[in-house]
Length: 344
Image (cartoon, rainbow, N blue to C red; front, side, top):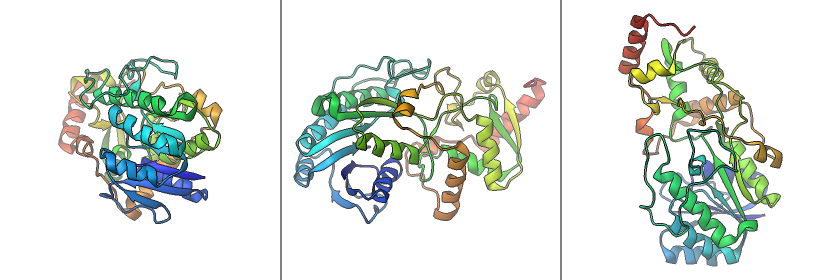
């Protein structure tokens, strides 16, 4: 199998390339070569996807059985790239996001839920951010999905819509932050309820399903998350304590109190968000098609091992937003104690 992977040398793209190489596939990568040196078994083609001459040179280096696009964010650019590669590629797998849904994160979702409208040739300024609603990122990803379909057709296009992706090499730093905080011990502010179920997908499971979709010629959209009502937030933090060999004391503070204390969802306490649809993304279509998700405990364990053995990577510009300061955490815990409230 001949595979072309666009972009992504750190996390999702890296996992897909590694999985393909391990499966014996011949892999070509296309990126600017500005980050981590890629796996040596892959054939690198250097270039910028926004430069037409670079894309033409890439197309001339083909052909491939499939293309996996992990770096498409602007519809007009995705359309240009996909059109250039359509004559020399069998399938186009576009890595999108659950952010394309109109009702995310407010309501539970399935592949039948309405998607944000964005034309396939939209420019980077299309769409807008609405507080607790659709984002420009979601609009742009929706338009890029449409661009992939416009270039390759429905039967030759697979759309993968992951939610939160965790695992080794995670550069946004959500799980790494929790691992570092729990490893430090002491009283740890824990958000909401330990029984809240969560659906992060391991990056290696996303990669495995990507290859499976190619070999099985799957088409259409698939939500790629762990099953609904699986692991809990409490499970994750308990496993963080186990793998770091620490002995923290978790103080679970209800959502409404955290909101009153001005704690920012999703960033100051990573993976904590109160909206009904955040962790209720239906994944039965992907599971029926072959998605297999490892236990969250394995993701936590392997992420900690990567952090210890290889050094943590926090190259994403959003990494600086992740995590509550120890000073604010102490203030919130003190306010909670003084309030006299109880979690029950």
